[in-house]
Image 1 (cartoon, rainbow, N blue to C red):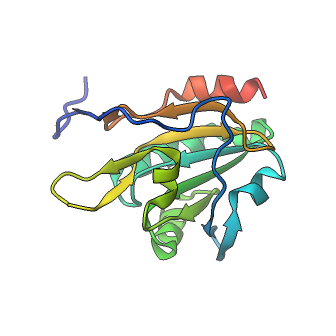
Image 2 (cartoon, rainbow, N blue to C red):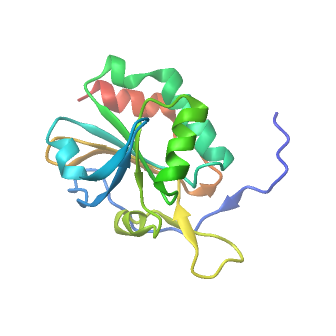
Length: 172
């Protein structure tokens, strides 16, 4: 058993985007290993299914763990899906994360956390009034942005059941 230097905390229930609902569209800087540009989620889903992964700020251990797992599983090579992330980190931090961790995925930059609020997945940081970041969350969207699979963390920290996500990908 792993000995953690922090407590696992139960997060308050929140209403979030659910399976069968149409996910909100948004436009934010989308960062890759070469550049970034404003892109809308609907532009991405027009090209096929998207796995939208919300995660805490770059540099936090959950971000490293989540992207390492996704990189190792390489679902985009097995399934017809585009994997993109979304966090409060700015484009410069995203570029560093991509370079340092060898991430081949694009990351939306949402410094005000408004996309997480629209999706119902904000996490208010203890002791920092008005400061929030996304809870870890995964939404599998089809070409019409209909949510085919949704998972949202109920504890801090908590990570998706990656086998369950892969099962949802297999059902596309």
